[in-house]
Image (cartoon, rainbow, N blue to C red):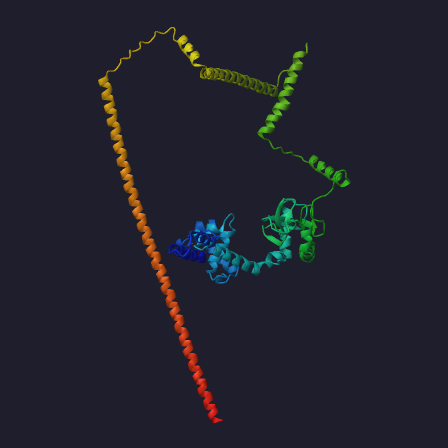
Amino acid sequence: MAFFKKTREMIVIAYAVKLLTDEEFLFLYEANKPVNLELPYYEYEEFSLEENISEAECKAEFRFERGDIERLADVLQLPPTFECPQGSVCDRIEGLCILLRRLAYPFRYSDMVSRFARPVPVLCMISNIVLNYIYDLHHWRITAWNQAILNPLALQEYADAVSDEGATLNNCFGFVDGTVRPICRPGENQRMVYNGHKRVHALKFQAVALPNDLIGQLFGPGEGKKHDAAMLADSDLLTTLEQYAVSPTGQAMCIYGDPAYPLRVNLMAPFRASRREVGRARLWEEIASNLSAVSEPRFSVSLRSVRDRVNLVLIKKHKRKDAEESKASGIAVDKPSEFDAAIEEICEKAEAAERDQQMISVEKKASAEKEKKQVEDIRAKALEKVGETRKRVVGDEVSEEPEKKEKRTRRSGAETMVYLREKSEKEFKIRQEELELKKKEQCAQAKRQEEMTQQLIHQQEQQRTMFANLQQQQHQQLQQLSQMQMTIMQQQQQQNQALVAVLQELAKKQ
């Protein structure tokens, strides 16, 4: 970024002193345009966890308390400093905070410039360096069998927790599944990473989740087209389970997956009985017997269920009963019960509400017709001709007395001259005001042009001085080089003279 900035400044100076043409200036200036955004990171304060960030901001931005970040750096065994390939250096707290802020989804590197006072490329390099360091040092905790959380006692504790929640298995300690992480469409080998189920280009991972919200084992990334069973075979998870997944009493422990996984001793899957099979029929019989054995059934009552029950069953049944009783003759009608009275009251209220609704609809219809008629009258008046309008107006004003109109008097020639004189004076004043405004605008424009020319002259003088300084520096450098060459030549002459003297002495001795 700094290289592009300095190069562009030199191009502007060269163009100002007329060393470059317009085409060359535009080409070079556009060719040296930086790829990243030129964010003013140097205007912000340097990052300090103790001084510039409050407890609430620390929790919101990094998802950790201020004291926990220091302990987290110790637990992760981070070095005192991190150094980037281009020379940027940051301490371990700042590097960890940059990584935590980046992982606080959703977030971008450009949003972190104001907090860490660093350019986007440096933030990206620091985040990747810290992430790679943590992965290289601690990846075995999830990519291999971690005895700290997957020992026999812990597996039995997980299985008990799963069983206590109502699971039929008493030896299930975790749940396995694959996850698809979408990526951008690659330029090559698109079929390898295309997932037909999700219809995206992706990488696939396989994870074993534990009841304590930890990931017990992680495998990946793999091609997005792979099936969950293929990922299971590539991860060699079944062999690891056969070797290590054992309870303290020697019982084989298992994990649970969806129907895509095979059924093994250490891997359970849901019931796969298809229709018209004996196993499925037995399952339905067991469900029916369990439902029949319920002593206290429970129902979820809602507004919709009550309304449907009353409308579809009770009211229709009551109306049918009344119709049958009215058609029958010579039959003694039973005395209505409280239930019949309540249903009758509900029916009366429903009928009253229906009548009110009908009345409201009739009123709305009448008002709508009235408004429609008014709109049609207005439209007809708007479309009628001038003669028709006059006839209609005359017809409306037949009963009214005609208004008395004032007679128009003809003005004399003196009044006309006075009117023309006043009009010419007004136009003359307006013209003078316009001329004054134009003069003021011209003066202001001339002042602005003078200021701009002075600024341009000042900038040209500055550029000339800068160019003169550059030429002077180059001249000094050339002088220094010539002096160095002279000194080197003198040293070589002295060395040659010394060698000649030594050779002469040797010749004399011989």
